[in-house]
Length: 107
Image (cartoon, rainbow, N blue to C red; front, side, top):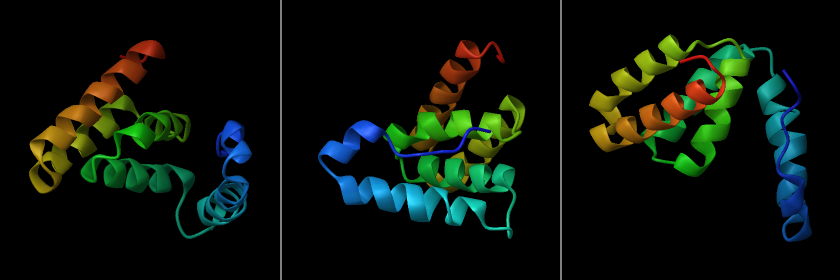
């Protein structure tokens, strides 16, 4: 998987936020040995969907697929979280997953 990084165009307005995102979040937290990248992606997608953070969700659904999660596994996780995080959150997440899967020819 390509190394994750914050969008470089944000460095113009928030250079420290981009640095911390790249150096702490992606270079440290995502690289820790306690969880696989696949497991970290499952946790991240679940939390973003549960908290209705749809702006970041699409990117991380793509990362999750790159990290080895299948469309079916992500669909199952989203279905499961509907009962704990709310139906609208799950419907938004599954709609984003469908679009990304179709774009990648994985649907």
